[in-house]
Image (tube, rainbow, N blue to C red; front, side, top):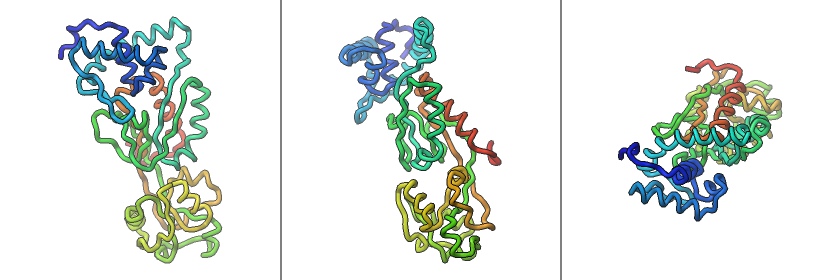
Length: 304
């Protein structure tokens, strides 16, 4: 469709844009200080004018149709310009408000994010942060989250991803556990030790064997799909566990279990939806995470 040949009612276009960014009529209505029925009528009027469906309802969220995605590209520039004018006129250009949901693992949520979020609260007190802790990949296209911290690169063109660094990891053990074996273990003896499992024990065994440790699933006597629970068991001396060095550094009671084990690396990605990346509040949170997560990594030997 040739959107340039169509004259938009700005109120309708703004209602559409904010609804696309917020993901629901109720959230958009709050953002625009309108009633939900009023906002709904404006979006419906725009759809009627254009003769297309702009949104599909998925669960409790609204997802842009193909026509909606195309239209959003043209309306967004109008919306950003209008937002700048509005913010400048009100003198509140730094008072950005709204909800931003971050999807991450429970381990990162506990050990790395608190100080980062404390600094963000000082920078942007009007932004409300919701942390969605999960060890599975949140579907950003269905608005399960606005931003995700992942260890795999997304492969969908609708997603914008930035690789932050390659995190190093080793096998760690509590001093209380290692003291029973002379404080230092040999890789060849790994099969005689207990390991704490996470969500996928066969996959964990594969990683450990790739590191040169002769272990099997029989070595995993205790596991939990919660990374935080499994890591706590390692801290309490119930077995050995693999963990990122930046997390282990937060736990002085833990030390590398094998002196002769080479560390491994895994990527850390920050991901958002391409449309959401143009939202002012999400851009602030995204850029803040990029700056502070990278800062926490002391060296990046595999950064490309």
